[in-house]
Length: 561
Ligand code: ATP
Ligand code: MG
Image (tube, rainbow, N blue to C red; front, side, top):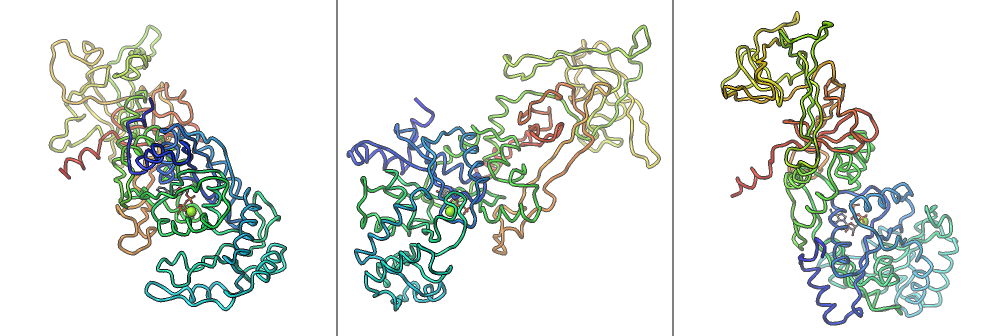
């Protein structure tokens, strides 16, 4: 029984029906087909959970197929990251395949179509082809090359392959119907001449298949049963079926099924736009923690399980919509709340000196150790010893020289609880020449060890703290939305117009309890009262804020009623 067993949607219903009717002899095989021209993003996580999840649920297999038909934009670096990201998400391709491995078979099938009178070599340039294609309600015009004899087409196509013509001089087109109401069927291009080096096939080919010509045929070669893709391909489905219907296939025809893309508020998921952010230095790279790439989200501290659960639970439909990023964050928070150890860190430190703190016989201040649970809800996670002395750091915003109304944290004369340690009362302060508070002096109640007074008197606020002599220095990165508007580009049509230029705040002087020195790269901890923070894998002592503690999604849902 897997987490997916109980799950149902229109795609799974289709698969179930095919199984019941014995189509594909009980086999279920899907594929995830990224183009290796960028890093995977949250939208791909959705596609991955659909492709792998559907196969898994029905005891089938899912392959990773790199759709590497465009030599100009593809690189090995992307391929490596794609595989690593899929594995990180928790899915394992039954095989790793490449569309470029089928270039030979695709060529033979193209020759087959030509010899059936179903494809022709066209010498027109791109612009002419596009003009002659017509438009909605506007019939297409036959190319003068459409009636080329089969023998001539065979000869020209062989010479295209042999490299006799320069880029753009000719294309191979399917001969379907220049007046079809579906534009995709108005003699689509199957091959272009491109004298480019391909990262896998090298200089073996100078003609490259288009997406439409390569995709369904690759599915057929691999014996895919259900070829799941996003909604923008639904008008291509008749073409997908047309090609397959004209070829001597090795197995039953695969079927294409489309679902709506995942889009998130305050986010873009177009590889091209994400590439622009990287190229222009708006972010530090593809795995910048603000990026919606899987690399970025992982570095930010998003657990793979939270992404999987989110992708599964939002469901799969044929209606385009945009999910609230707060909803995704609430899955992240739920997962981290269950698993992330608690620690104390002070983002913007202010010195708190406890006057009258006892000293040892040798005159040095006494160090006390408090045993603190690593995760209060999860006793198995154990406890740790946290050092406490008379010299501490507290959060600057937890102290107010002139407390505003309803401010119950520290101010002169007010008693607060230092979490798990003592009750302290602020007594006086020191300021610098500019009048900024530099040190707060306090008294403490020795009877309140552990954080409660024996007389049971109430204190309103509990604050986190770090012992100054034991503190380690850390840098903390706080993040805001990468795009200021929920639907980037809604007003102007260009999402990058809504870029938030202040999406990161780096705090270099933060202080943390010494236990944080041992945080493994990528580990996420909860800084008490401040949120969840992921230890950076590359820069030691850098912590990225994953999410805050407050569940904004719950508030949004309440508002929406
Ligand atoms: P982009 O437009 O950003 O370049 P793409 O769709 O071209 O993305 P591919 O590498 O071709 O990216 O995508 C691989 C698979 O992932 C395809 O099946 C595609 O439909 C799916 N996919 C891409 N983006 C999303 C998304 N936002 N939501 C769901 N599935 C997606
Ligand atoms: Mg694509």
